[in-house]
Amino acid sequence: MQLQSAKDLAVYVKAYALAMRIFELSKTFPPEERFAMISQIRRSSRSVCMNLREAWAKRRYEPHFVSKLTDCDGENSETDTSLDFARDCAYITVEVHKELTDMCQEIGKMLGAMIRQPQSFLIGGARSKNDKSETANL
Image (cartoon, rainbow, N blue to C red; front, side, top):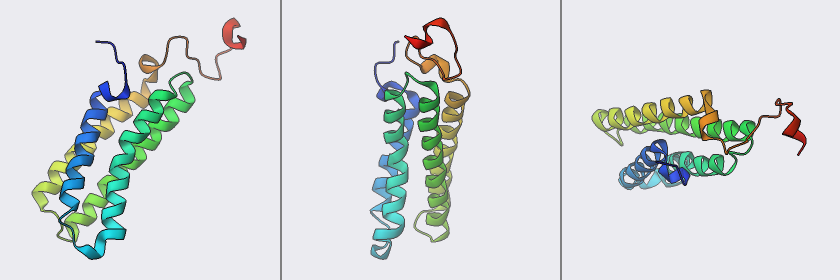
């Protein structure tokens, strides 16, 4: 199957599912966390998907693509840390924490694989700035 959109990536589907799960769970957090933890965990979890969409749009140039994937990975790590706080503040159970951090870990591994091997995702003819081939000046 040819990928038509970032939405076709398994990592996008998993990250979106995680963000939606976090959205639903964060509705139960105490009101005093509205502008702190709730806002932050929702933003970081959603940013993984948003940055994947940006990365997908930048597939013509490998360094830009990898940079956006790195942003995804950073947001995923931030989400994982927020989940630790949610567990330690007793906003989520240990079991839910494990489920969600396992999802973060899986997403992180998938992003890591894409960062290490971005070539298969690049638009045909995409080159890094270090590529000095004859067609690089076209």
